[in-house]
Length: 214
Image 1 (tube, one colour):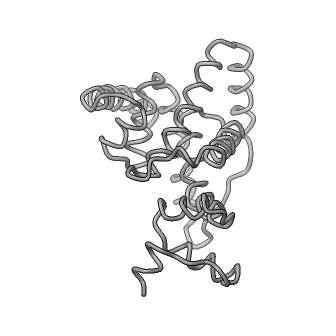
Image 2: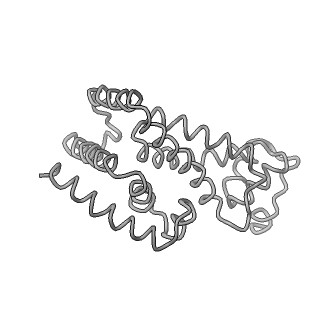
């Protein structure tokens, strides 16, 4: 019965709550097919699965949380409109990361052409640094939380200083845990190019963050 629900789910006559529970157990490509078959809740499941992960990836790439949220929203808009183009013999995660990565790269290119936008982004991040600490987990000691938050800020600062091509492969590999093969497909680069850029990115990152940690 489990295999039947996983590969050939029948959502007819099932309540919304039961649909959502069932969708939670299915593979991405099955959910995409259900969405193409007219089940809107299937798309909601895709958003729930990938929203946070994509935001982390895009934010670390463009260095602007608000703009990152806009780009993730645009990613889902494109998935909604073009789901029929998804090749179900491939990984859905690779496809959606490719869309988000392309939007992030376009954002960086547009920003580099506009000094005003770049200055406004820096200024926004400056002001954001003065907000009070966010205590994510009350069970942690305050000094541990502070060190964790401080390190996160330093890492993001160092990542933002990486060149665009190096930054994307670094974020995908070191912060998102993607395989070299997935990164090659997402970025449209050869495997050797990915490894070369990642090696340079790691060396550059180490050189940037080392003085910040001393």
